[in-house]
Image (cartoon, rainbow, N blue to C red; front, top):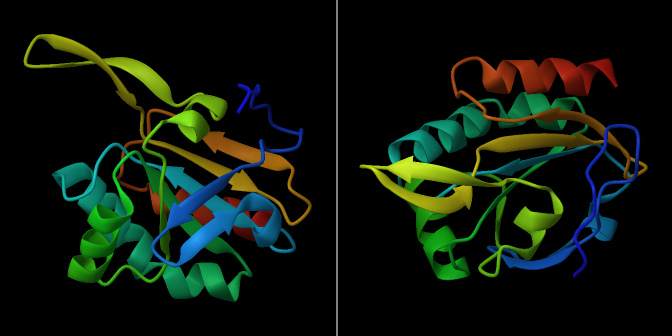
Length: 156
């Protein structure tokens, strides 16, 4: 999968991944707004808080016509357990090779306890019904983020 440049106002990079509901493609999701959020890892404090925040607002996103999908490098089985444990009402997609993460340019050098590594930077993308990227949030802080994304969906 070639690395694409993600730019607001341009078509979002297409992809196909396995997820908690089976195979999933960006092309099949078009026709309504899509909130695509990338997160580092299942069952970690920040990722759980973010997932629960999107879950709490899920009905508002649906009412606005939008679909929410989460992506991380974790495997499908990990995603299934994470989704069930927290009753997340949306699909979680597995990107173990980080190909989609690379296409959306969310892999960054990070540091944990002085050790440097490359990992997923918490990021969210709003894609319109035609597949055009309309908003991008990077280095996401969970507090207030879901509300900002919902406001952007409603503004489409």
